[in-house]
Image (cartoon, rainbow, N blue to C red):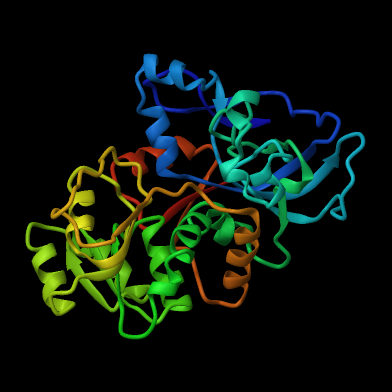
Length: 348
């Protein structure tokens, strides 16, 4: 089968031929229908050889932590209501299945995964950028039903991650409140839609050029601003000097995190989702009173089901650019050049 693999640190991924994997006991073999491209992949492939080795990533590694497919074969002993031929989405943050967090479907916060060497597909384990992929346990599969896998595969991360980030701030986002979204790309443009679907907040979206802000307007942002040196002042003016009730930074870079903190109102949430290499420095007097700063990771399995239900109801829609598996390297080139509108999806 064909697979898009990272084979050498510092080099672009390549399409290679490898054997179709055989599911072991308890595993499921999927015939992949779509795989999503994500900045997390770009981050991993941007690590130095020393950093890559220290993180424990293998070489070669099939990319793709956003996956959808059709069940092709069940391994020995698999017990599930799912059957061969069912369309499913892959829940990516795999855990041990028996720690306290995993028992609640919160495998993104598994307390045993690191010690047991359990890694997500495409981020340590072979992922979805191939014609077939192994899923370690049927509990990591969520029925897709009649949802288009190509249009919706990105929701397994680009929908689940902002949903998880936003959900805990919803009590602060009733009518008359303000939510700021920094970065309106792959995750941010879905985050805007989630905020509009679930909250009463006025959504202020920021990005670095008019093209990206046009996408933000297209998906429902109430106000769009260029993320420049005047952005903080403009947000404070819009909010009557009080600041926003919640700020979601989908970039997480050195310039954006200070911006996020600077526009947070009293008792606001600042949620840093992006992995752009920035950090938070604050103390008494440098940030509004009782501001909570959070750094969440991915989301719960139950939340993925909720995200797919939002898509099924027509509340959220992912802007995608489609690539074949052979053109997979070009998708990552476009990602690295920040030239994608929304998300790239690779279709075997």
